[in-house]
Length: 277
Length: 260
Image 1 (cartoon, chains in turn blue, red):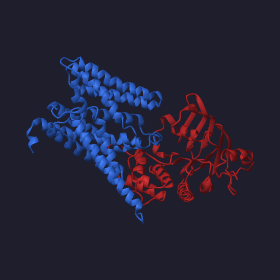
Image 2 (cartoon, chains in turn red, blue):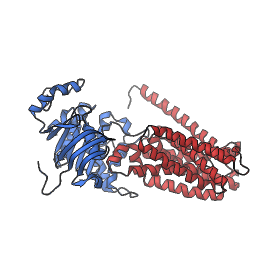
Image 3 (cartoon, chains in turn red, purple):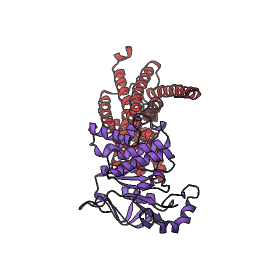
Image 4 (cartoon, helix red, strand yellow):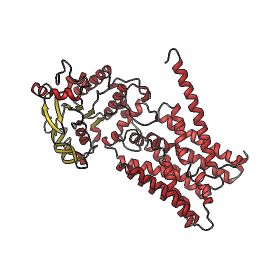
């Protein structure tokens, strides 16, 4: 494999495995709670953090992490109040994040909004050695929490009212999931990009649920799909010189369309069968 | 009906106003439920039946008064594994497929410690709960492949997974076919024999009726009847209202002790 000779490609491929593993592990709970677009909003908010990082010449990863986690906590607190104005508050937060990010980054020395492309849509050449270490630590935390406390996150996502009535710590669990979403957004920022990460959390899970018969199987299949499309996207990005994030997401969507079509055909055949099982 | 020596009542509500943001749906409710009782909470839509049990479980704010569970003020109560709750909703969850065993196991969490694996005892409790609602063999079945009545029974199994001392059910029979209602009555009957205290909301008693030892009737947030289910004086009094409110449902049936 020629691409493995380049250090930047080794880093990009490792980063894509990390994000391919963690994005669906968080996304399954977002899909279950019908909060599929929360990751998208957090990507917007994280951009403001990236800009602050670039402006102050600190690591954009840690600044993005602070912004995304703060945004996640704010979203969950707004959501838990259950007010109708919460929807508008979220919109203000998301667009405030992206607008602030674009304006701030344009003020950076030598910075123009076009530098944003790599952050927004992913690029294979940008992952540094220290990024990779940060991503490994952050992914490990995400996987540990989403799998270690998976039963609790499942209970809260499956039936929040029941979880409350059983005395489970619902708000802390919701905050934990929101923070894990924020962390995943940050892990994605090199290879997938802040505007596309939500797709990698949601689409592999949407594909997996078409063929899985249980929650556990959905997580397992979704994670495998996440890793496969991430590796395929990064590899294609190298050979075709395309933005890696967009390429990964197109692979994920292509797989979704294939599986959805196949399972639709299978369903129709089953219904037509003279003696359905 | 008295509790065993020195044992506190299972539920005590004292002067409770229950509702949202200053608007009490239930007012001045005094209700004591002793161990082993099977209490039916009855009333028309909007009478405060669900609000009462939601207040009891901490899902709707208590605006005034005091709630005690097993003798402990509810704000300090931590032993949630002793309480099982079956919500009114028939279905659960979002779009992710989940199996019967997965949903029922989520009811077991209050008996578990975080980060620990489940033990054989946990798995046995989940299997027993599924068997108790007559769904053994369906552990790996996806929820969406079940009928509405079967899904309701899964939610009952979920509430049974901790082996609770108090089981609270919100309209367990509404929209459930006769066969599933009978399966439910058998399951509840077995729990009653084991001494489980049961609180159930209903306006359509059906096969569970013989199990009920006490009926509380609510109207516009106030208790208008509290006593044995076969209270002739009461049902004549409210006959017309019942019939009127549930005109589209077969509430008044010949031979239905409480309301017929």
